[in-house]
Length: 391
Image 1 (tube, rainbow, N blue to C red):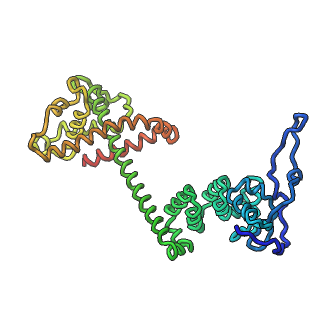
Image 2: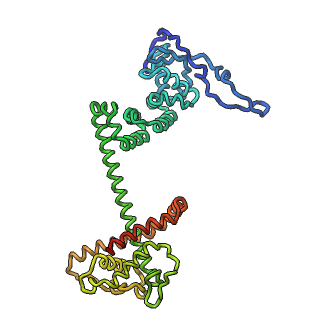
């Protein structure tokens, strides 16, 4: 961006014919019809009053008025010779290939850039758009470079995105490096930043660590949410069994019907019925010893009692008795256990709201994968657990 005398020799490189054209499709004529605008119309421009000089000596004629109206940086550079009363008007754009500068000048006149030019000179155009403050070109280059990231180029693009203040491109490069780090760390670009930019290396490693921690946290949250939804489903099945009855277990005054159609949560309901039958006939429970399956049934009954808000007329066994029980006031351990239990109850209750919100996605998933296959998969999981306890 420095002034250079006009006496520099002009290389024999030919400039493209469409350098000063912005290719509008058509404009209305006097008879309200449309006529095609040809490039020759836009060549009817005044004589260029300055030159843009590239690294290999190429001079590109340009118009100071057009350049100044598009870029505030170029406007400042053009005004400098006027203030110093210097007649030489040459703007040097060095450090990038001449073809990239030609593409840059074409954008200044047309506000467009083809996919071919972006693929060949995207990195250089991003640097030029940042230096000369062209947000439209910068956004175009950022979007195109983000779609063309490769293992070999991602480190270079990442460094450029940080220097050019392109946060969207910087974040996408970081995610790309985190997803393909085993391959990126073998590239020359990674070895370069290890030797010359340790702070950027530290930022990348911290981002990878945070990304992995976030993934583990999300997996844990999904696992817990699935557990709470299963517990909520079990509470619904328990009320259904104790009030209406199902295939093999029901209220004492209702005869269970084996030919009855399965309920909507049959896999969970069937496993719970087997657990209730075991709980009613377990000899270890009657001997005050108990077993793992009986303790699980006991916890399910207690959980129902904590959730149930109509214990006076509830048909689930022991619902009212669990509500009447309270820990001793001086038992600190019991109080801690009750605090954890109350948190579990709140999360199981909130699972109902989560289930209703995700019902739409579940329906779409059932249509795509098949409702029968989904139920069969859940049923096999439940019944396997029941068989394991049987043995």
